[in-house]
Image (cartoon, rainbow, N blue to C red; front, top):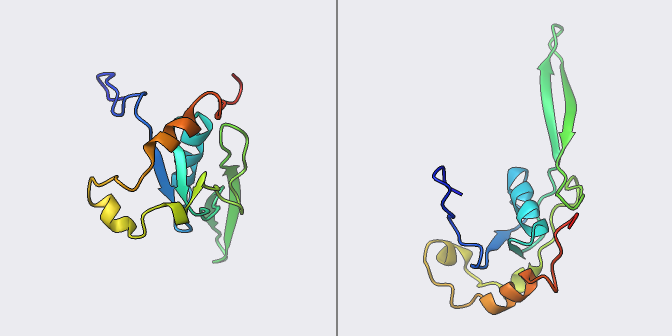
Length: 129
């Protein structure tokens, strides 16, 4: 929602998120959260799996200390670290040249009826509901 409480993407419109091995950290959190809340279908290939938040401290003797302070976990409880996010639809179902898809509005090769079905209550359940 925007600051004026308007929907950016109406709830009735299906959402597809592309991930791959280059998707990490906040990208994985967003994809996992939208997926677990039945708001988006994840497409592509498995993400990187960076699920740790670390603080780095320099010590007086010149060495350093890396301390893990948190972990990324999706709303359904999936720990992202080391495993990443698995797509609902693998890359072989997605248009071959992603850059052309991203840089254009051509979604003719995306099956939005399939995406709507995957987001329907019969196929997707929000955790805790």
